[in-house]
Image (cartoon, rainbow, N blue to C red; front, top):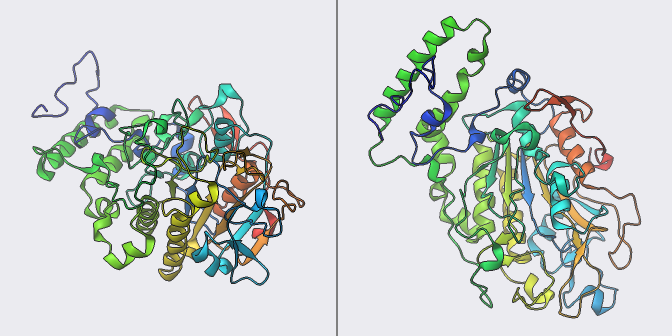
Amino acid sequence: MPSDVFANHTENSNPLGLPDRRDVLRVGSLSLSASLLPGLIPQANAAASQEPTGKAKSVIFLWMGGGFTHIDSFDPKPEAPEEIRGELTSIDTNLPGVQFSETLPRLAQIADDLAVVRSFSHDSNDHFLSQVYTLSGRKVNRNQLFSEPNIGSILSHLHGPRNGLPGYIAVPGITWPGPPPHNLFVGGWLGNQYAPFSVGGQPDQPDFTKGPNLPNPSPLAEEALNPPELQFQPEMTLGRLSRRSGLRQSLENSVRRADADGTLAAMEGHYDNALHLLTSPEVRGAFDLTKEAATVREEYGRTKIGGRCLLARRLVESGARFVMVDYGYDPDYGNLWDMHNAPSQNFPHISKMCRRKYSVVGVDRALAALVSDLEQRGLLDSTLVVFLTEFGRTPKINARGGRDHWGACGSVFFTGAGTRVGQVIGQSDKQAGYPVTQPHGPADIAATIYHAIGLDTEQRIYDRDNRPHQLLDHGQPIEQLF
């Protein structure tokens, strides 16, 4: 690295001598995600100074990409024939008359803290189309897979970073559907700067079909979730970083005096945010799971999903606005929730697969610990927790012992931020194939999140070309939750 990080600016390439984003971000070991820097559209910057007005000050978005099985978890059918119900038994929850599958013993004990929606439904069985729909609340075609911003991107655009943390963080943000792998965690028409800050960086093995495919891999895993972007290069010190920051400030001050239209002033905090992320011990420490007591780590489970949920709690506790816990496509476990039992998957019968501690049973432990931990720390009142997947699985188990894609019916849940918990919303038929009550689709889930934050779904937001868009073009908040 040159002795002066800004020395490579020439008069021709930058007549004002203003350091660009790349220069500032080079002070870390890698360039920081563009999502650390809010967009430069004036409307976005004006909105970013406003705090949400709703009950939810933070959101934890529990994203189970791949199609989480509802019959083998939140909506068992003990009276159905075995080809429907499978080999699993049903257990009572602490809500009278409500049962979950045996795979969810810990969530069953805190069911009174949950609002389970058993009528999640839409009309697509396609992974890509359904995931984009669920991540954004916007129905798309094949030409729009990367055009629509995620819900977290909207929040980041409207409200910006907080406490030095990016407005939209994905943990780890690298589990992409495929093959070939598609990165659907995008800022869309808002711009790449509103894609999530993904703590896992780029995956070594982005195609989940090319993992080791072991018959029964260990559920135990200690992931590196402390972003490499927050680690200094060996030759970089805080003193050197501070001197470069001072040089940048003097350059910007001189340019601002000559900048009549105020555009540069709108940029003022963006470099500071990236530098703050690099230099603040509090911000850097929020990503460090080694600061947690061993007993807490054990409660979540020493699994990938356990570590990811624990990091989400740490980030929200430190002020993060929107954290997506991303769990579904994995180089060790394959496509966890896409349980067709295709020959390439090397899965056992779905009932046996769900009992594994990296599958539904492991999710149960981690999610129950997360909800209880948030409640004990006084964070649940201001944190909306949403468990979501793109669709459920077929009621009938196929000839290979798996279940296929099923957009017609699935289960999700909400808790926190003033939602009415201790209830089941909606009901499926006797085979969990179709809702027999009002269905709730991905746009309704998105509308519910926006409502909890205090946003009007009819309000207009502006894309990177300053064109207006409605926050959502359809969908209504789920009334029973509020």
